[in-house]
Length: 285
Ligand SMILES: *Cc1c(COP(=O)(O)O)cnc(C)c1O
Image (cartoon, rainbow, N blue to C red; front, side, top):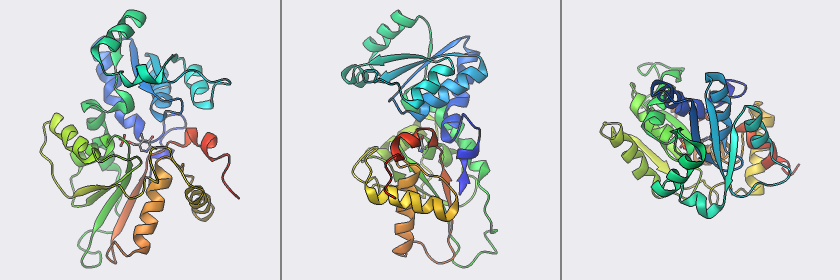
């Protein structure tokens, strides 16, 4: 497992990779404020708040839905990092990419550098290409069992991280995305992301829709039980939105014998543990 969750105490997982080049671009273009979007448990807003403080940029988080009392740990942290939170109705949130809505935001907050929800833009993809350099295969291709196969598996929300891995891939391995939401559109989004980066689809990847468990942030007692058992056996914490579904899916695929003997699999732990306590409080014992 590639433990991106251990990257930094406040900036864990893939979100930093999606933000790095965006924040660089904001600074290069002379902005002192960055604005982005997310839900009340957003790993993206959490990371943006921390990264903005570290990089000396003011941050504004446009949050889906009315504020709840008491304010949750994710938003408390974001505010402590200096992020200004702006709650909008779910209806307004759905129009967040419309020019009219963005014009309203500019009227309200003045000039800002905009990062789309989840950091899903070209700079986000390009930043994630760096993740490919962290893959540490334990067996050289020639020496591993025959037929040797290498697989990198990761959870997908927007597919930005997977597209970045494809961009950064220099060796011969297959990439398996595990959708964390119902998203037939995901493979297309990855192709579009690659296209926007000016590269052709290199192939040898796919996204499975089999393990989202009913949709985004939907989780069953079985999934929560799996996460608990996994942590007990390995000491590695997972969360139920992304990495729990990834590992549960991978284990089931292994049980089914979907990977040939001798396959080396690296699962990417994309982090996201910051919101976990709120989700897993009720894990059955
Ligand atoms: C955002 C996130 C993902 C999904 O990344 P995408 O680039 O949107 O596919 C996966 N895992 C965790 C923990 C995340 O926070």
